[in-house]
Length: 320
Image (cartoon, rainbow, N blue to C red):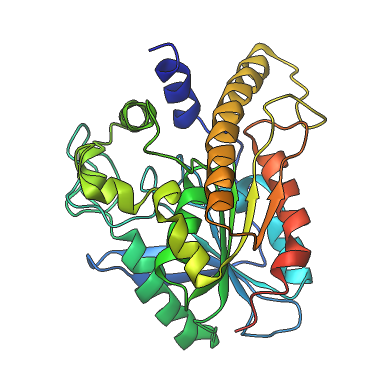
């Protein structure tokens, strides 16, 4: 229980919040998901106008319905488009792990839509990102549906690896920053359950079923790692140490709380990520860049730094 409580806190509050920083260069793209709901994504066009180099940027557990966290809290879109990479930022998917759920969440609340803790239809994010969204992007912009990149932080980190594992033609590159890459480890399932309940009352059994359901194994990067090896996916795997650094300068009591929470969260992420690193090593897979800086907490400035360091490597692997 001593591990479970801090892990729950960490998972349920993946970074200090900030006011939306709308980027006027972004284009709103709407596509209808498998449930018939219109979902928004934000697209940032590559500086040179190409349509072959495309990357999807996935959000964390507290994904909002107005803008993707990468747009709210970072300027990575500017760096990516200047590297002649088209950026796709799906909007929404709070607590979803970007997966297809087996049932609507029915714990608390009554949102009456595809998002919220009492849903009229189950999440269908995996199908959306691999079917309806790329089809819309191809029709609207001519974007390639092959050899794309995908990266994400925390919840989005494990989801990025999932997409690369099961959809290798679409995704040839995947990056995970502070991801939870061993969700079958002791305490992880229970902590995720509590975290999702605390984040607007989502019922985790509606996602992958009870803890013994095989869907948990299907969505565990530690378990599906052989697929990444067999696909030859280029990976960028990163996690900080949990030790505060230049981006962590608390000026108030709430800042102190957020920094302390981010320290614990990142330490747990590092344990998960190191376990995944060992797993890949036992599989004999080395087509990976590991990024383990000596400092860094679970917060947006550190994840932005991950992207800046990743861009040169990713550029070599996402030509459609």
